[in-house]
Image (cartoon, rainbow, N blue to C red):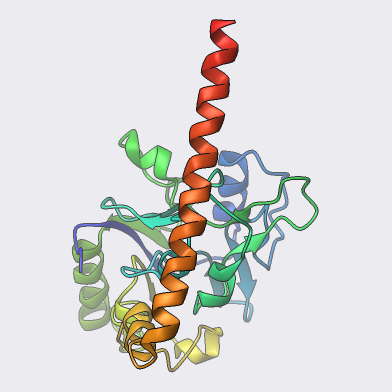
Length: 251
């Protein structure tokens, strides 16, 4: 587990429901402005759900330490970076949407109406991180309800708040769920009340999948061969595109 990966700590107790995070995310990714988003979509990488007048919870990609979306992708369109974000390469995507089925948090969205559709989700502002900046939602938050840092730093801060400030449900959501996530939550109420998925266990989902598949080696062998074939075809398609582009420049 990479506790030096960058992540977010979202403190529901501190959130004032201003939706600045939603607006900043949309502006950064050049999406239509709609700060009222309460559901994730291809143009809303984060959404804010009002549970009560004083209780608001964000939805976004959890950037799992061992992401099941990446493990099921047959062509490597999704991957976990050393820096922390789980990123997506639309050029590799086959449109199989296995990632949408595999995600235990129900995050990835598909561009159903696009001519060349892609999967969309929060990328933790990976380009901003590469420039030494913080994610747009962190920069926009006036109440420091969302902060960033390494996973180790965020866990230490989360436990400090629970132990010293009081008024928190005694658990950091994402510390252990599905092997741990890079986005962590603190809350004054149980996470079930916030609508966050329960009963996920503490083991990474890809490990559970492979242990089950090991019991049926014929399926694994055939499936593996099929996925390798698909990957080869995709790689070859990229090579041909590069060769055609190079030929066009020479002529």
